[in-house]
Image 1 (cartoon, rainbow, N blue to C red):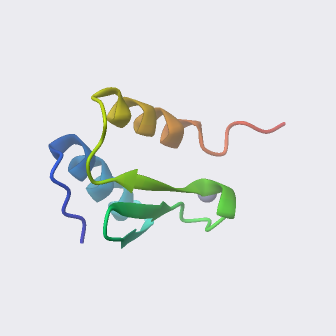
Image 2 (tube, rainbow, N blue to C red):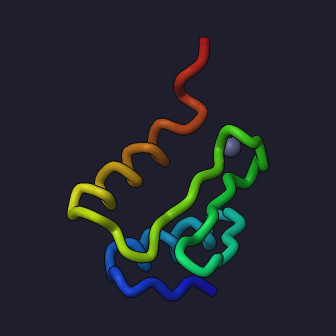
Length: 70
Ligand SMILES: [Zn+2]
């Protein structure tokens, strides 16, 4: 389903979808939902990232999911 103009983000979205994430496309961004559907674990992914660090930050955010407690 994903179709993002940024190749790195497109690859990331494809990987998330393959891992059971839900993705919805809005007019200016994607909304991504962790498979657990916890409201904390969702965020938007802009279609026009402001900087190259955007992908890095997004990747880090995903890697940190479910690891911040206890
Ligand atoms: Zn989750």
